[in-house]
Image (tube, rainbow, N blue to C red; front, side, top):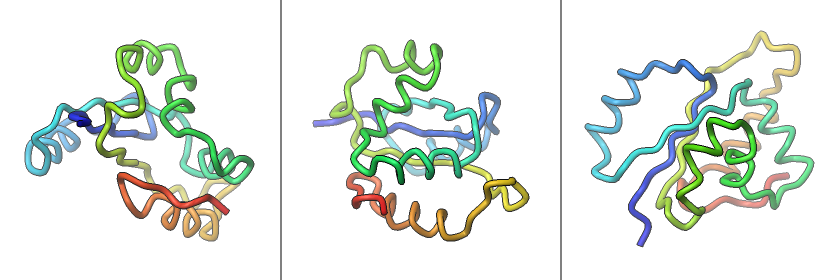
Length: 116
């Protein structure tokens, strides 16, 4: 049974005290945190290009730091994956439609719908 939870944050310097508080209040599992290192719209674009991408593998390949943090894990080690991104409505590629599609895709922390 998976015993870890993966937190995916936007930047490399997230509000660590906020994430720590969330973890302590809501989760008993081991929490692992990785950074996607760009706004949520880039993740949406990647998923729309290939809706069957494995998010865990995408995150692992995203940076050397992520690879090191995740090297002892496989996707089945995580019972849940949570995304923590800012709403960047001012971004050049901002799209509420893309956000809506991502909300459907990631509506359940343990399963995901095909991204369209």
